Amino acid sequence: MTDNAFAPRLTVEQVEEGDQLAPKFDGDGVLPVVTTDAGTGEVLMLGYMNAEAFKRTVETGEAHYWSRSRKTLWHKGATSGLVQKVVDFRIDDDQDAVWLRVEVAGSGASCHVGYRSCFYRSVPVGKPVTPEMKLTYREDEKTFDPKDVYGDAPNPTQL
Amino acid sequence: MTDNAFAPRLTVEQVEEGDQLAPKFDGDGVLPVVTTDAGTGEVLMLGYMNAEAFKRTVETGEAHYWSRSRKTLWHKGATSGLVQKVVDFRIDDDQDAVWLRVEVAGSGASCHVGYRSCFYRSVPVGKPVTPEMKLTYREDEKTFDPKDVYGDAPNPTQL
Image (tube, rainbow over all chains, first blue to last red):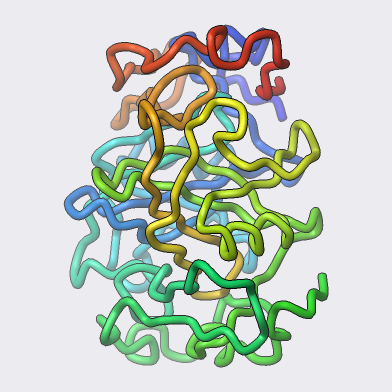
């Protein structure tokens, strides 16, 4: 994908060791975004940005994503009020992934299911995976009721 | 992708609210993995797992990834000695992304360029993106010299 706002990717050294912004979007035109709570370090969610979401996030300082399920630009918090203010916008060595450190407005939650983090369950480690394996909950209760916040909007989870 | 070690994905409620492990791998057979330092909370890298890497990580307690550039199972640290011991293995709401909290052996670095984190540069926020924009370095120096550790092995970064 070519975008005049970004530098062209010319050499590995330039991309890894330089100070030019030359992000790489994948075949679907997106790159993955890790979002953490700037205060606690907790990983809140993993999302995706296309070039437009990337540029709007940089310009506005509020996290924008590309919703793969809804196929639309997504200003996080536009519906729920749980806007993510970007404290630090990091990019990785080969510039195909982003890490946002954010402060979340309101209740501080970021997960559409109602939890603070989307990663509210753990897989037990140290034994082979079996269909009987049980996940462990890491958050005791939901921060909000999704029905109150999203009403009848379709659930973004796809099977 | 069907794998008998995992539960089948039957309903949104089961996947989001249940305790069954039913991960979703994408069209390429992988899912994204966020890896953070269990001590500092710093995001070290963003990698990918296929079903085999997922199962080996759970069973051994050491991070395994699928290397998209080398198209091979990748036991992180096998070459460099910088093995990642998994302290907590989280999975997200729709079970298509993983968060590993790890302790890194040796120097504690996780980036093939030599830095502690792959996310060693920041994009300045608050102004429109332009080709002249300059990235800011967040780590002052490399933790190791990649030539000492990897020798002549090909650089995994692709343009």
